[in-house]
Length: 149
Image 1 (cartoon, helix red, strand yellow):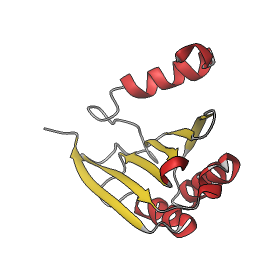
Image 2 (tube, rainbow, N blue to C red):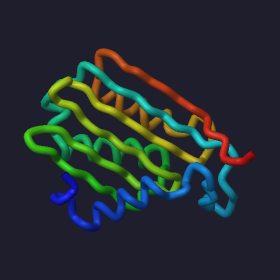
Image 3 (cartoon, rainbow, N blue to C red):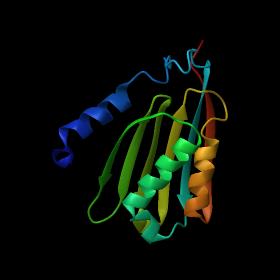
């Protein structure tokens, strides 16, 4: 399964998965240390039109635009379009990460965003994504993550 993934993509995903971002979110932002509480938003959006879920260029554009509107600092992206359908994108942020994985066969999409900028962060990005995709049902979870004992 991994044989078709470019080496740079694999390295990026390995870094993202195994980086200590949640335990030690010490990215400096505007000269200050990150707050001791991060925010994780996860959601599954159901009932999205299949043509939206199969439009990888539009999904990437919508996610990047939403992140920029919330003033996230984008460091890079990795994406993959699956055969016969499905799409994943991971966006590395200086504040951590955001990701989308689509399930066109079920008209659904999984979204994940973690930010070390503090509680409530990421909500604007999430709301912009929801407003664009117009799901019929949402399973939403938000968790404040303490990174300081």
